[in-house]
Length: 273
Image 1 (cartoon, rainbow, N blue to C red):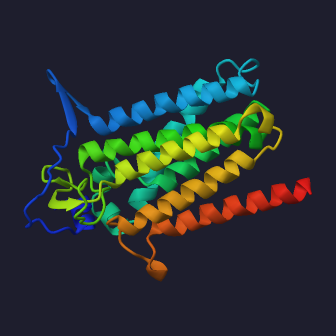
Image 2 (cartoon, rainbow, N blue to C red):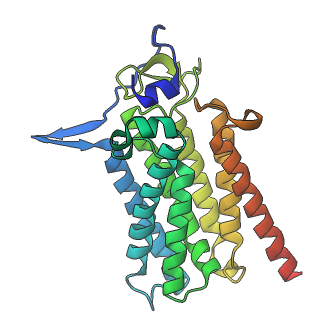
Image 3 (cartoon, rainbow, N blue to C red):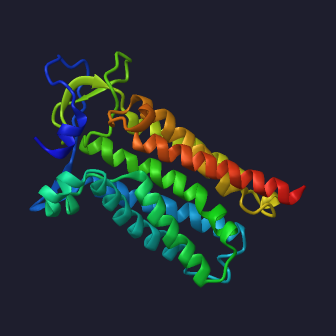
Protein backbone atom coordinates (compact mmCIF):
# COMPACT_ATOMS: atom_id res chain seq x y z
CA UNK A 1 0.00 0.00 0.00
CA UNK A 2 1.43 3.38 -1.00
CA UNK A 3 1.70 6.51 1.10
CA UNK A 4 -1.24 8.03 -0.78
CA UNK A 5 -3.36 4.93 -0.27
CA UNK A 6 -2.76 5.03 3.46
CA UNK A 7 -3.60 8.72 3.48
CA UNK A 8 -6.85 8.15 1.63
CA UNK A 9 -8.16 5.47 3.99
CA UNK A 10 -11.19 4.78 1.78
CA UNK A 11 -13.01 1.44 1.70
CA UNK A 12 -12.83 -0.53 -1.51
CA UNK A 13 -15.79 -2.86 -1.14
CA UNK A 14 -18.77 -0.90 -2.43
CA UNK A 15 -20.28 -1.17 -5.90
CA UNK A 16 -19.44 1.86 -8.03
CA UNK A 17 -22.27 4.02 -9.34
CA UNK A 18 -20.06 5.85 -11.78
CA UNK A 19 -16.49 4.94 -12.63
CA UNK A 20 -13.95 7.43 -13.87
CA UNK A 21 -11.39 5.92 -16.20
CA UNK A 22 -8.22 7.62 -15.06
CA UNK A 23 -5.39 8.32 -17.48
CA UNK A 24 -2.20 8.61 -15.43
CA UNK A 25 -0.07 8.25 -18.57
CA UNK A 26 -0.44 8.86 -22.29
CA UNK A 27 1.43 6.21 -24.23
CA UNK A 28 2.93 7.37 -27.52
CA UNK A 29 5.05 4.55 -28.85
CA UNK A 30 7.71 3.80 -26.23
CA UNK A 31 7.02 7.08 -24.43
CA UNK A 32 4.84 7.25 -21.31
CA UNK A 33 3.87 10.88 -20.69
CA UNK A 34 2.29 11.61 -17.27
CA UNK A 35 -0.99 13.47 -17.60
CA UNK A 36 -0.32 15.25 -14.32
CA UNK A 37 2.78 16.81 -15.87
CA UNK A 38 0.85 17.71 -19.01
CA UNK A 39 -1.76 19.57 -16.97
CA UNK A 40 0.95 21.40 -15.03
CA UNK A 41 2.40 22.47 -18.38
CA UNK A 42 -1.07 23.54 -19.55
CA UNK A 43 -1.51 25.51 -16.32
CA UNK A 44 1.79 27.30 -16.88
CA UNK A 45 0.84 28.11 -20.47
CA UNK A 46 -2.56 29.53 -19.47
CA UNK A 47 -0.97 31.53 -16.66
CA UNK A 48 1.59 32.92 -19.10
CA UNK A 49 -1.02 34.30 -21.50
CA UNK A 50 -3.10 35.84 -18.70
CA UNK A 51 -0.03 37.37 -17.05
CA UNK A 52 1.30 38.72 -20.34
CA UNK A 53 -2.05 40.37 -21.06
CA UNK A 54 -2.11 41.92 -17.59
CA UNK A 55 1.45 43.23 -17.91
CA UNK A 56 0.56 44.75 -21.28
CA UNK A 57 -2.51 46.58 -20.00
CA UNK A 58 -0.46 47.91 -17.07
CA UNK A 59 2.27 49.19 -19.40
CA UNK A 60 4.93 47.00 -17.77
CA UNK A 61 5.52 44.72 -20.75
CA UNK A 62 6.70 47.58 -22.99
CA UNK A 63 9.83 48.12 -20.87
CA UNK A 64 10.25 44.42 -19.95
CA UNK A 65 9.40 42.35 -23.05
CA UNK A 66 10.74 39.08 -21.60
CA UNK A 67 9.27 39.53 -18.14
CA UNK A 68 6.12 37.43 -18.60
CA UNK A 69 8.12 34.34 -19.57
CA UNK A 70 10.40 34.64 -16.54
CA UNK A 71 7.54 35.47 -14.17
CA UNK A 72 5.81 32.24 -15.16
CA UNK A 73 8.75 29.89 -15.63
CA UNK A 74 10.86 30.72 -12.56
CA UNK A 75 8.04 30.89 -9.93
CA UNK A 76 6.38 27.82 -11.45
CA UNK A 77 9.51 25.73 -11.15
CA UNK A 78 10.15 27.08 -7.67
CA UNK A 79 6.52 26.35 -6.80
CA UNK A 80 6.80 22.72 -7.93
CA UNK A 81 9.88 22.22 -5.77
CA UNK A 82 8.26 24.00 -2.83
CA UNK A 83 5.04 22.00 -3.16
CA UNK A 84 6.95 18.74 -3.16
CA UNK A 85 9.15 19.67 -0.17
CA UNK A 86 6.17 20.89 1.84
CA UNK A 87 4.29 17.67 1.14
CA UNK A 88 7.08 15.29 2.10
CA UNK A 89 7.96 17.28 5.22
CA UNK A 90 4.38 16.83 6.43
CA UNK A 91 5.17 13.12 6.92
CA UNK A 92 8.76 12.96 8.25
CA UNK A 93 8.54 9.25 9.16
CA UNK A 94 7.67 8.23 5.63
CA UNK A 95 10.29 10.61 4.26
CA UNK A 96 12.99 8.95 6.35
CA UNK A 97 11.73 5.49 5.37
CA UNK A 98 11.81 6.19 1.61
CA UNK A 99 13.39 9.61 0.89
CA UNK A 100 14.23 8.93 -2.76
CA UNK A 101 10.81 7.44 -3.55
CA UNK A 102 8.90 10.35 -2.01
CA UNK A 103 11.11 13.17 -3.26
CA UNK A 104 11.17 11.96 -6.86
CA UNK A 105 7.58 10.72 -7.07
CA UNK A 106 5.55 12.58 -9.67
CA UNK A 107 2.67 12.82 -7.19
CA UNK A 108 2.27 14.40 -3.78
CA UNK A 109 2.34 18.20 -3.98
CA UNK A 110 1.02 20.68 -1.42
CA UNK A 111 -0.59 23.87 -2.67
CA UNK A 112 0.71 26.12 0.10
CA UNK A 113 4.27 24.94 -0.30
CA UNK A 114 4.03 25.85 -3.96
CA UNK A 115 2.40 29.19 -3.14
CA UNK A 116 5.14 30.19 -0.71
CA UNK A 117 8.06 29.16 -2.94
CA UNK A 118 6.46 30.58 -6.07
CA UNK A 119 5.64 33.85 -4.32
CA UNK A 120 9.22 34.27 -3.08
CA UNK A 121 10.57 33.69 -6.60
CA UNK A 122 8.01 36.11 -8.00
CA UNK A 123 9.01 38.81 -5.50
CA UNK A 124 12.69 38.29 -6.26
CA UNK A 125 12.10 38.79 -9.98
CA UNK A 126 10.01 41.90 -9.39
CA UNK A 127 12.69 43.35 -7.12
CA UNK A 128 15.44 42.58 -9.63
CA UNK A 129 13.52 44.54 -12.30
CA UNK A 130 12.80 47.39 -9.86
CA UNK A 131 9.04 47.12 -10.34
CA UNK A 132 6.63 48.00 -7.54
CA UNK A 133 5.99 44.82 -5.57
CA UNK A 134 2.27 45.37 -5.03
CA UNK A 135 1.70 46.14 -8.69
CA UNK A 136 3.50 42.96 -9.69
CA UNK A 137 1.50 40.91 -7.19
CA UNK A 138 -1.71 42.41 -8.56
CA UNK A 139 -0.69 41.51 -12.11
CA UNK A 140 0.17 37.93 -11.17
CA UNK A 141 -2.94 37.16 -9.13
CA UNK A 142 -5.44 36.30 -11.92
CA UNK A 143 -2.83 34.13 -13.64
CA UNK A 144 -1.99 32.32 -10.40
CA UNK A 145 -5.65 31.62 -9.67
CA UNK A 146 -6.36 30.21 -13.13
CA UNK A 147 -3.14 28.20 -13.28
CA UNK A 148 -3.91 26.52 -9.97
CA UNK A 149 -7.36 25.43 -11.14
CA UNK A 150 -6.09 23.95 -14.41
CA UNK A 151 -3.30 22.13 -12.61
CA UNK A 152 -5.85 20.47 -10.35
CA UNK A 153 -7.28 18.57 -13.32
CA UNK A 154 -3.99 16.69 -13.43
CA UNK A 155 -4.94 15.26 -10.04
CA UNK A 156 -8.29 14.17 -11.44
CA UNK A 157 -6.81 12.48 -14.52
CA UNK A 158 -4.28 10.53 -12.48
CA UNK A 159 -6.69 9.66 -9.65
CA UNK A 160 -3.99 10.52 -7.12
CA UNK A 161 -6.27 10.77 -4.09
CA UNK A 162 -7.11 14.48 -4.20
CA UNK A 163 -10.79 13.68 -4.51
CA UNK A 164 -13.38 14.06 -1.77
CA UNK A 165 -15.47 11.99 0.59
CA UNK A 166 -18.20 9.56 -0.56
CA UNK A 167 -21.28 11.16 -2.08
CA UNK A 168 -24.63 10.18 -3.62
CA UNK A 169 -24.73 13.25 -5.87
CA UNK A 170 -25.23 12.46 -9.56
CA UNK A 171 -21.83 13.85 -10.57
CA UNK A 172 -19.91 11.72 -8.08
CA UNK A 173 -17.04 9.66 -9.50
CA UNK A 174 -15.21 6.50 -8.53
CA UNK A 175 -11.57 5.79 -9.30
CA UNK A 176 -11.08 2.00 -9.29
CA UNK A 177 -7.92 2.28 -11.40
CA UNK A 178 -6.56 5.43 -9.82
CA UNK A 179 -3.19 5.74 -8.17
CA UNK A 180 -5.23 5.94 -4.96
CA UNK A 181 -8.13 3.65 -5.87
CA UNK A 182 -11.69 3.78 -4.59
CA UNK A 183 -14.79 2.08 -6.00
CA UNK A 184 -17.05 4.28 -3.91
CA UNK A 185 -18.51 7.30 -5.62
CA UNK A 186 -16.80 10.41 -4.25
CA UNK A 187 -16.79 14.18 -4.72
CA UNK A 188 -14.62 15.15 -7.73
CA UNK A 189 -13.06 18.02 -5.77
CA UNK A 190 -10.50 18.94 -8.48
CA UNK A 191 -13.43 19.92 -10.70
CA UNK A 192 -14.89 22.03 -7.89
CA UNK A 193 -11.55 23.75 -7.48
CA UNK A 194 -11.25 24.39 -11.21
CA UNK A 195 -14.68 26.04 -11.31
CA UNK A 196 -13.90 28.14 -8.23
CA UNK A 197 -10.52 29.12 -9.70
CA UNK A 198 -12.11 30.28 -12.96
CA UNK A 199 -14.59 32.48 -11.08
CA UNK A 200 -11.83 33.91 -8.87
CA UNK A 201 -9.56 34.58 -11.86
CA UNK A 202 -12.41 36.40 -13.66
CA UNK A 203 -13.16 38.48 -10.57
CA UNK A 204 -9.51 39.41 -10.08
CA UNK A 205 -9.13 40.30 -13.75
CA UNK A 206 -12.09 42.66 -13.46
CA UNK A 207 -10.67 44.11 -10.26
CA UNK A 208 -7.47 44.99 -12.12
CA UNK A 209 -9.08 47.02 -14.90
CA UNK A 210 -7.09 50.13 -15.93
CA UNK A 211 -9.37 52.54 -14.06
CA UNK A 212 -8.67 50.64 -10.83
CA UNK A 213 -4.93 50.08 -11.17
CA UNK A 214 -3.99 53.09 -9.07
CA UNK A 215 -5.14 51.15 -6.00
CA UNK A 216 -2.10 48.92 -5.81
CA UNK A 217 -2.40 45.80 -3.67
CA UNK A 218 -6.18 45.41 -3.79
CA UNK A 219 -6.17 42.64 -6.38
CA UNK A 220 -3.54 40.64 -4.51
CA UNK A 221 -5.36 41.11 -1.20
CA UNK A 222 -8.55 39.78 -2.77
CA UNK A 223 -6.59 36.86 -4.22
CA UNK A 224 -5.39 35.88 -0.74
CA UNK A 225 -8.90 36.08 0.70
CA UNK A 226 -10.78 34.38 -2.14
CA UNK A 227 -8.37 31.52 -2.72
CA UNK A 228 -8.12 30.99 1.03
CA UNK A 229 -11.91 30.78 1.35
CA UNK A 230 -12.20 28.40 -1.62
CA UNK A 231 -9.57 26.02 -0.26
CA UNK A 232 -10.92 26.23 3.29
CA UNK A 233 -14.40 25.22 2.15
CA UNK A 234 -13.38 22.40 -0.19
CA UNK A 235 -11.33 20.81 2.59
CA UNK A 236 -14.56 19.91 4.42
CA UNK A 237 -15.23 17.30 1.75
CA UNK A 238 -11.63 16.26 1.13
CA UNK A 239 -10.03 13.14 2.61
CA UNK A 240 -7.10 14.91 4.25
CA UNK A 241 -6.46 14.05 7.93
CA UNK A 242 -7.47 16.52 10.63
CA UNK A 243 -4.82 18.04 12.84
CA UNK A 244 -5.42 20.80 15.39
CA UNK A 245 -8.87 22.15 16.26
CA UNK A 246 -10.40 19.63 13.84
CA UNK A 247 -8.91 21.42 10.83
CA UNK A 248 -6.67 20.07 8.11
CA UNK A 249 -3.25 21.62 7.57
CA UNK A 250 -4.58 23.21 4.38
CA UNK A 251 -7.47 24.77 6.28
CA UNK A 252 -5.14 26.25 8.87
CA UNK A 253 -3.01 27.79 6.15
CA UNK A 254 -6.15 28.94 4.32
CA UNK A 255 -7.15 30.86 7.43
CA UNK A 256 -3.70 32.44 7.49
CA UNK A 257 -4.16 33.46 3.84
CA UNK A 258 -7.58 34.95 4.57
CA UNK A 259 -6.25 36.89 7.56
CA UNK A 260 -3.24 38.15 5.60
CA UNK A 261 -5.47 39.31 2.75
CA UNK A 262 -7.90 40.96 5.16
CA UNK A 263 -5.05 42.72 6.97
CA UNK A 264 -3.67 44.01 3.66
CA UNK A 265 -7.08 45.31 2.62
CA UNK A 266 -7.48 47.06 5.97
CA UNK A 267 -4.04 48.66 5.69
CA UNK A 268 -4.67 49.84 2.13
CA UNK A 269 -8.01 51.35 3.10
CA UNK A 270 -6.45 53.14 6.06
CA UNK A 271 -3.77 54.55 3.80
CA UNK A 272 -6.46 56.01 1.52
CA UNK A 273 -8.53 57.41 4.38
